[in-house]
Length: 496
Image 1: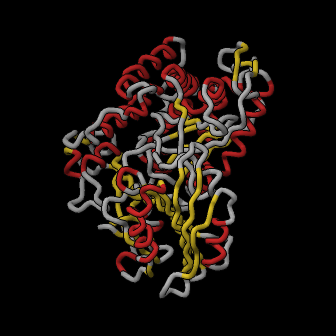
Image 2 (image 1 turned 120 degrees about the vertical axis):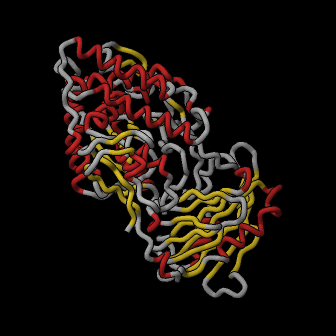
């Protein structure tokens, strides 16, 4: 079960403790300033959140890719402020961790204390190691400048302070009903505190600095932001309002070559692209959503690996995550969350585990009529903001697993949504269609052009999974009618 928010950016949730002012060094500036957390606290925050992020979104399991990302990460890190002789030992001795997340979303971000993440979606949209190094340096820059701790000093949301270190920005998934962290672990509101424009610009500069000092052609980093601008234009929208605190990709497209020129004038020769090696690493990498882990088609959610399907109510949207599937009603006024309950041995036990929460008042419960392997309940809960929500909780047995459906909306709207709340689990059944069961993911195949010609002439007649020609052009950082010379690399999504 994987996340399927199209044209969105990556979301992450970090639970912070109450902040306090701490005066410490900034490794980048070398001066003392106020931070929301001590460096040891930042490392602990990152360590605790790392396992949550890896479990929630999944790591891309490919040893060659993993080793490559770590090697480039360490190379860029070695030239950063975190490893310079005049930097305090507590920073120099901090171990960094570099991960590739199994997500099609084009993004990279960093957690406080040395945790850096790249998505496979980002990696396939880059054309060489120089571009990758600039992005890597940008994220290391967020950690080195302690931007998360600076931001946490200025803004805290109750017990939640949520920090996004994305190259482009963050998104808000508007789950209604306030935070449900105290209600159950299945549903949590995703909130973000974005970095300021100045912080993003500083990290852009650090990304260029660290890559240029390694000899990479750091001006290549601009091509990535060109791609982001094209993706935004393709969606027929400007940068969304929730990214308003971030520099526009067009601005960054122009400033990165200027920053690279500064370092060249300082004597740093920038000649390394490592295009061939990078293409070798991403060859065979998954592109887009992995249909084996669930996909939507014509109002039905199919999961080939787990061999089940269920209907999606008309007008509802779907968010597919590794640990759960979230259905959002029209206007996001209602939510239905499905997950595997590995801690319960029966549907009744699964439902009861939810009802046992102190915040929940049970209305009714019992076996579902006509189904010996299903149990349901209704209940109400009062949230901290005074809102009262009503829940429909249902669990069922399929194979050797127990599946739990937790559906809720504000109490005043519950009657309007009771029918879809019931229909979703009632439509759950075994997937038997052999073609859907055999669906395979789309993967990137890289090859050198055997002739010269317009890019459009290299496209196959039939493209998989509703991929459009413009998507492949953006993937290759070219225009549809751009001339490709013999010997140039081409990335093509293919599906077996």
